[in-house]
Image (cartoon, rainbow, N blue to C red; front, side, top):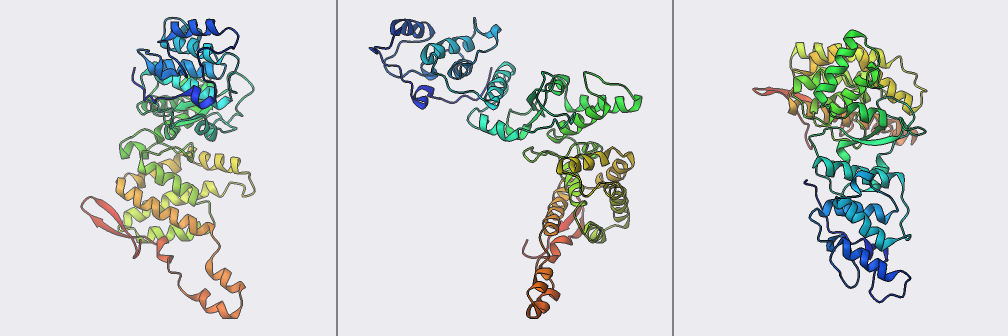
Length: 399
């Protein structure tokens, strides 16, 4: 099975070298154990010296032993994982490093990748990386993670055709991970649509809303045709670390988050006013009106988590999704990417204090500065040109 493998030296790293002739008790037993696990050596020994036919599996077993953990029982006999674990246990004994939840998740992911033959670089996807992905709530069920086996936090690969990387992982409950196992993004979307049509009850422990959120989440990391991606409701906003593969969904998320900021109507009108065709402006305004109506129902004093969930729930409105798809299918990948950049620039300016307000606070000497046109004001007003390949935003000078 293929998996990216790096030459590691746990003994040199942890400061537990094995030297022949040591007066440590049980030294001869330790040497015999190592001889059975790999070639006899003098001085420090590591997984790279094992001579195993499967160094990746040997390394996984070794790292289990280094932290006082035991691999699954089925792998202890007759596999390189068990060989590495026995060799590591003979070396480390009771002198093991502490194990954290992130480290145990890391070892479990490496085992999963090894069994599937999927790429995983343990030097890039580390326990520290997984710790940064941790979240208190499952994005699919919205239940607090931890406290029971079903709610245990589990890193899940969003697109099973892509490697195990931080950009392709999200932490969900064990129930969600089990329900998703073996299903592609297209199959999950079909199940979510079927459950919504039939008003079905829960399947595999997930209700219709949870399946819709799972379909949205997995679609973000799966390359889809533009027209198909435009028809997926944004039931989960992309986590900050996830790489969104479809530009139309990245634009969808940027507009959703941007419309909740002050001055959204002015910015939306500026964008609509520059669209080249009347029909396109009409479709954009219909979408903005449908989404804004839902966003205005959100309590502005809501906590950040409730606000995020409310933004996601706005896309459960079929009218919002229908208006979005009608507008978005007219844009190609480049159109979506350029427009997303414009929306994000506008959002950053909306979150920063306005320059003329700061100038007004400094006194009369600065009053004229408050009336001057800001140099970057045209960033919020994209100009468009129509080409044979579709609609292209024309960036202002200096961009």
